[in-house]
Image (cartoon, rainbow, N blue to C red):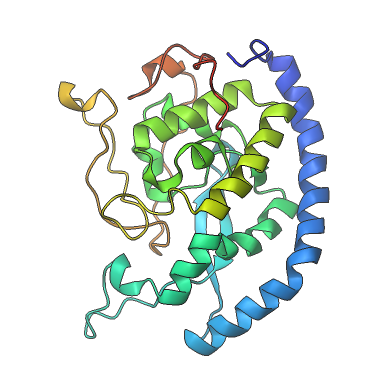
Length: 266
C-alpha cells in the first residue's frame, strides 16, 4: 500500500497507456541530449576494447518475451588461454567508470523507444533465471522491464535477490506516475553517489541460482553465486507463472500489494 492507498487495477491500466507515451517522449529527448556523450564513449571503447562497441544480449521482457538488450560494452571477451575468465578479470577500468556513472546504459534508451523497455520498471535479468523464479517472483514480468526501478534506488546490485524481487513485485502492484517520478529523481541521486554499483565481494552482481527450500534461506538470505549481468550465453525460456500473491515470495515483506509506508527511497 502506498502513501495515498492502494492503486486499483483500472488505475494501473490507465497509467500504463500514459506511461508509454511519456517513455517515448523522454527517451527520444534523452537520446538527443546524450548523443555527443554517446559518440565520445563509443570512440573510446573502440580504441581501448576494439569492436563491437555495443553489448547485445537476449533478455526477458514483458510476459517473458525475449528482446535484444543494448548497452555499451564494458568487458573484455573471455580468454581462457590468457587467464581472462571471471567478471573481475574481464571488467576493464573504463568499464568500471561507465558502470559507476551508468553511462553504459545510454544505448538502452533505444530499447525504450522500441517499446521493449520502460524508463522505470524491474530490471531485465538473464534468460537463465526464468525457470528459477517462484510463481510470485515471476510476476515481475507483468510489466515492461526498466532502465531503473524501485529496487535500483533502494540498493541496486548490493540488494539480495529475494528482497530485490519483492520490491519488483510490489512495484508491479502499485505503479503510478507519482512513484515513477520519485524513482527517476532518486535514480539521479543514486548515480551521483554511486550507491550499490556492485554486490559485496563481487565486481558486478552474483548469479541468481534459485530459491532453496531449506528453512535457513527463507528469511531472504542471498545465495552465493558467480557471474554478472554481462554474461553472453542465452538459455531457453521457462514458465511464466504469474498468479501467486506477493506473500508467497521468498524474502517478501507481507501480503500482495502491501509494503511499509516508508516506500519512499529517500
